[in-house]
Length: 317
Image 1 (cartoon, rainbow, N blue to C red):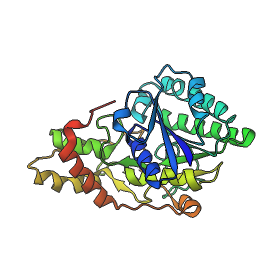
Image 2 (cartoon, rainbow, N blue to C red; image 1 turned 90 degrees about the horizontal axis):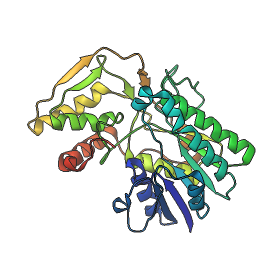
Image 3 (cartoon, one colour; image 1 turned 90 degrees about the vertical axis):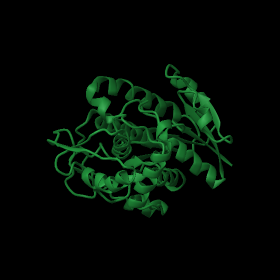
């Protein structure tokens, strides 16, 4: 039985990845996190806490006893990267490079690093975006993610690190943090429940590829199991939905709860990429993976979860 380490496995996407690994029944799971989040994980998981001041060397000691790695950890989100671009580099890039350098010395079967499908491409020349589309990110977050991808491929070519980079779309689903600078679906639902105005920038807002977090988890595990080292894979639904379309689906649901939503249309923002929809054919061809949940059904399920559990969802990290 293989042992898989999920760095950041106690987070929103990480918890679903852990559940998917356990569901398969052919892997033991070790989760590395920075906080004492072991209570949120299944009892079968071994949790290792590495506080923010932990050195990379200590993390490598943990990884030396595993066969595979999925790295979901990241210290910033797109919004915070604009607030402090230099910090976005300093808290993410050096640690990632040190981790790749040390991991390349270990006999790992596979290392899956989670990049960003929503930011590394920049303005779309064609939609959907295939992995060979030009990468011209216009956010500090996307630039740093792309730089880490380049280092990942350097270590693949020169040190034979069996790394796979996954570019995920916009995950949503039960338990996502709200008002945290990313995650339009969760924040829109929370805004409706809180009686807050939902701001849309432009008449329709931006068009994004939204993927239910369960499908996100199965896609990441598919890349781990069958993805080819050295490859980059888009992970999304292959469909685009505007902010306005998301809200239009949510409004009738809100009204059934007696809520009176307010939508505010604001001018478009220059740093928003207008459309980002991912071509997911490469991941399907290499692993057989495809989404199992429709957008409308997933949105309804997510709404129902927040209505029942919203008070227990932290507003920010």
